[in-house]
Every structure is written in C-alpha cells, then in structure tokens.
Image (tube, rainbow, N blue to C red; front, side, top):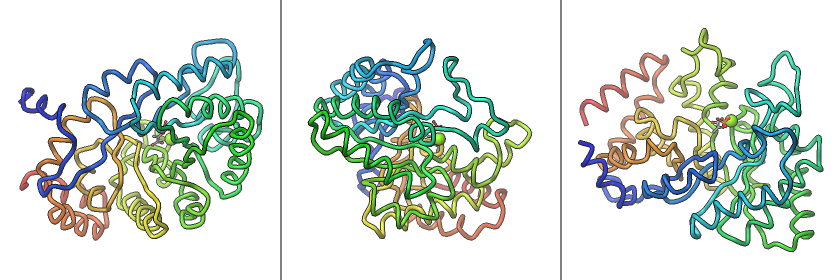
Length: 317
Ligand code: PEP
Ligand code: MG
C-alpha cells in the first residue's frame, strides 16, 4: 500500500473523471520546501512567516526576511508561493513583544498588530516586494475582518512597491473570520484572491477556542454551520470571479475533500504528509459522486448526520 501511495509522487492530482485539481502545501520554514516538492505539488498555499520572529530576542531585519522569502521563491522555481504576513497574537506570542489579554484570540492579533505598528508591517512588506523578483509570489493577509483593513493595507503595499521599485504582486486575504465571510462580495473588489483558514473560521463560527480540550467537540469544520459558511464563501467569491483556496487543516482531511471538491474549491493546501493520500483519494473521486454527497451533507441538521453521510460515502465508493 505504501508503494501504491509512492506512485502518486510523480503524478499531479487528477480525479477519476479527469479533472486536474490544484494541490499545494503549507510550510513554516524554508527548509520544508525540499520535502514538499518531493511530494509533487503545484505550489505553496501558505508559508507561515512566524518562525522568522520566534526563538530570538528582537524583530528580524528586512534583510533577514528578504533572504528567507527569496530562498523559498527560488526553490519553488516559478511555482506559486503564497506568503502570509505576520500572524502573531492568539496562540503565538513573542518573548520580546509580550501581549497580556483576557481573550487573545479576540484581541490584538495579526493584521491588527501590523496596521497598528506600520514600521513593523512595512519592513516585512519591503522584504516581500524585493523578494518578489525571484519567483511567483502572492501576499496573503491573516485575520481580516473589514474592508477598511484591506484598504489600509493596500495603501501601504502601493507605497512600498514604489519605494523598492517592484512589479505588481497579487494580494489576497485569509477568510477566517465570520465577518470576512459575510463581506466577501465587497472584499472581492479589493483583493486578488481568497484562502479559507478553516482552523480559525471554525473557531470563530462555533465560538469555541481551538486550544480548549473541553470544547473540542465543537472544533470540527464538519459542523453544518461551518459547511454552510464555507459553501457561501466559495459561491460568493466565484460570483465575483475570484479564486478561492483553502489552507486550514480541513483541506487535507479525507472526510472533507469530496465535499470541498464538489463546492468548487480552487486549491487545496495541506501539510506534506497529506499530499499523497489526498492525490490517491482524488483519483477515486468523480464530480457526480461528490455533488451527491454535498447535496446530502448540506441537508444535514446535526454534526452526527454529516459524519454519518460522509462515512457512508467513503465506505461505498
Ligand atoms: C487557519 O486558521 O486555518 C490557518 C491556516 O491559519 P493558522 O492555523 O496559522 O491560524
Ligand atoms: Mg488562522
């Protein structure tokens, strides 16, 4: 069986009825690029840049960041690389930048910090625009809740781009707050692409802390409400002609892949270990079967019902 999986390294992801599916990987460090490339992927769907800021005693310089981004872009040899701007706060804190809050996941986090400290944000944006010359970069903003946040950021990206004399770089956002999901049609006018962050989107939709074991039964993206919100995100984004991928854990989850495929998700970005099983699963999948399952799960009233319908479909494939 291992051998059977290994055969998928060389192949792109193609469904049983011949549709090519875009598969990407999530990475957290430039050293992860070689192993994920070996799994045969179409790009990097999420490069978490927090590692550059951890295990040290001050913010990284523009040059340090530039070198890390350039390394990843060069290694990917023209394949798309989505680099996410700083997402600290929440569960990720820095020793040299302490944040004391009652509710860190609802507080000073990610884009909120970056817009509050423009010099911090511009340093990262300068490094990104400079690195953009070395590959196919896309910039992604985490934790967006409002159109204002996007407009403020785009003013800064325009300014930085001129400053370093770089070409245009697509700028997209993570859809990981219910607010962004609800405003997707308007947000679509100001961004180049979307990527659904199912980990946080589940946490904020279910109002259940993703780190809290006591409420972990609520932290599953297969709850009917989360499936509905994801379905509306993809539909609304497509109505506006925008590409929408997913970089949360759900994208590599065998229970979710047929449903997301049926919804028309444009890209699945997952951890390295999930790539070969995902390719194998897709190779056994048809659009028609997936659409039947989607229709069933969208009618479900409870989590239990969703799980039963998926289990039945997985068994009777
Ligand atoms: C997410 O929220 O789904 C996501 C991909 O971002 P992170 O897990 O880094 O918060
Ligand atoms: Mg997130």
